Image (cartoon, rainbow, N blue to C red):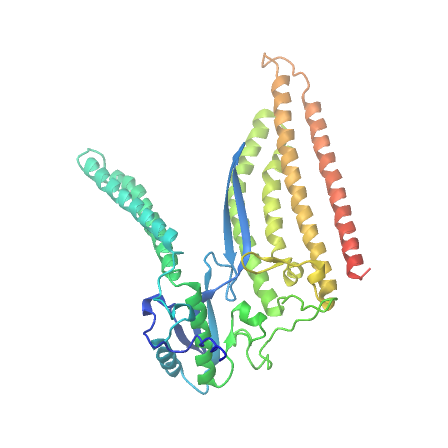
Length: 450
């Protein structure tokens, strides 16, 4: 006898159901002529950042993962809110909510049919963080109460008491806010990823049966599988085929990557520009006092302002160039890495489909140009710091013991150092430009576009 096939995720269990508090929350709303059903689902890794620290033989590091989202910027937790959408003509939001409630009443995930469902251990670090921040807030409250008791009996003005109590009040506000953030993340992560995945499949089946057609999805993984896109961002009037992704083949016959379409590129470019704008405003706030300090040093010591200006401006400029690279539509349209599990997937030349080869090569050239410009600014920063330190030493040595005596002529040496720094930066810039061009020529030759 052949073995029975595994049951569907929506098949009701005969021995009970999963506790409702363990299931991810489902929100049903109607927006115009579209009904949307939202739920958190497992997401793939979109970005990985590793920060290393330590010295000598002792090294440590912390890896930060960002998870892809079809509705906004990458998230810091692996369960990301996504939505399914259906037209509101045949049914209303109340009918959809009743159908989903009836399906969830007997819902039993496939992984928990033989054993009781247990919460995930993923929220444990966030729960510890929430308790720690609450303890920090309680300590601030105790400190404020003691300060108030000590200051009430003093002879100082009443306004001074409230000003001093404002500092622990700020600590209380920060502690409570961070505790709320950690608690919210812990509550979202209480659901095991397998339960969230099975419930997402159940919602898709329910909406298909209610609407009589396939629902649209904002989840990138569903889009890559060729399913219908979200009806709010891809309305049927403009996308009769549902905005389904079309993937071409590579030179060796394999399926090419799922590149972002025009809507995705527009969304990613806008998000990148907002991120660059916010960072730029923050850097401007930091640059204003730094520029005033540099101007004061130059006026007080007679040191040339040019190297100080390079020190102040070069590093923020490098940061802005890196951020603007993420807002370049050519680079965003053909990314070097795509979301994957357990880490992002690197797209090589052999993985690119034939129609996308020209665009991919152009994107890599633009990306190399942005990286080269940022590296030039970083080298300018390092060379300017070194030149400023050497120049300050020479200026100090050139100062006469007697303030009224003549200087020993350290100014010419400073300008010589500036010329050497400029030569180093120009040499590296020319070499970087030639490297970008040679890499692009070699890349196009390998792609058969030369």
